[in-house]
Length: 200
Length: 402
Image (cartoon, each protein chain N blue to C red):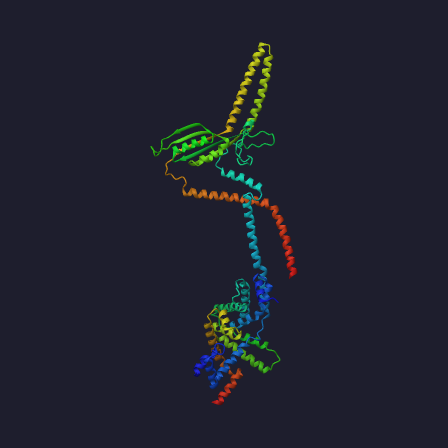
């Protein structure tokens, strides 16, 4: 298997095979990013497609200062945020599609009750994320869902490190507030809540 | 640490809270305060859930297919960067080949025979102002020697001197060309220029046949100016040098060189002369043998007619010989006031001259490119065949390596 450097070089010369090999490991990540930022499958699919085409077309300008993953996520994030800016006036999209997909995706070996609980929890998370402003949402998704470092998030979003930290911090705060409403979905919290009740 | 401070720091835990006093105080507080500990647990549970949130997201098959086919379409539709790069290089090489080849051809490095043709063409253009009123005038047909228009004067053996550009296939007759030039000059320093003209004439071994001067000197009549008309005879071999030198004396307003080929008439006359000479010899022989008075009178009368014709024809030949030996140069020298600016004709004139000259040289260059392409075509075909063969070998090699 050729390494990324070689694949990038070939893809920059217009080799579609090399580009496929280069992007395949990242396609799911890009789609997931779009899905989290946009909140619905249809837009996520369109934006992921658009982002991948943009990555292909602008590969010639990629100077390898950032890692390919960071660079491609930057393009995907920009495509999503552009769409959100364009559709500012549009009413919020339903998140059902996202939740349903995750229901179907769980495997059958686990306990059905636990499965249902996990799914409900994820649904609450997804809804909480969707309530955030686009900038905060992007920062939170990149840092806490996708696992980029703060520096990488700053590079993806093209904003200073301090701004990223403050966005992530505020986003976590808001999300936690939103999840408190669904405290029963978090067993850990219930334990603590019981203890607290006993203490009182 | 108060609960309020703890809650303010909570969202930054753990990744945005470096090891240190603050972090220790934060954790100590959590150990002591159960509501804050609960909040911390809540926070950690949330982070844990977030990190696994996307674990079971599956990529829609339609997306996986659609971006791949879109990329394929684009890759097939647009030439790759390498191909684009190759295209530029090929275009640059083509331009370099055509223009470089044409320039080399012009310098005579490539296809010297074409360059020679071109040399004649350029000469014709350079002397475009030289009128060629008669069809007989021999210019371009002249042999491609340094002095193409040089006279030819070889009717008599001794006339075959250096500089004569007489061709002829083997023993054929040599061309007899009569050259004449006419130049109009404007001079600011009339007297000095006239003197230097005469000096030039002496140096070139010529003489003045006719001189006429009229008009008043500008010094005495500012609106006037003298005009000298001179008819000079200059040895043909020295004509070119003489004309060049004359043109540097003053400002040339017109210049004309004609070359009249009289070979046909010359040799016709010579033939008739030979015939009459033979006739004269026969008549002289007859006369010495004649006894009858009436015969003597008749032969004598005929002989004098023949002699007259011989003289006339010889005179004609001698005239041509003299004119072929010494070209006729007519010079009109006009005195002009010093402040007149010759070098700067009106702007419009300069612009149209400049444009015309560019167009002429572009036309000449394009013609050269065409000539070059035609001459290079056989080589190009050869190169293309080699190139195609090379490309095929390269493709086969590449496929094998893949």
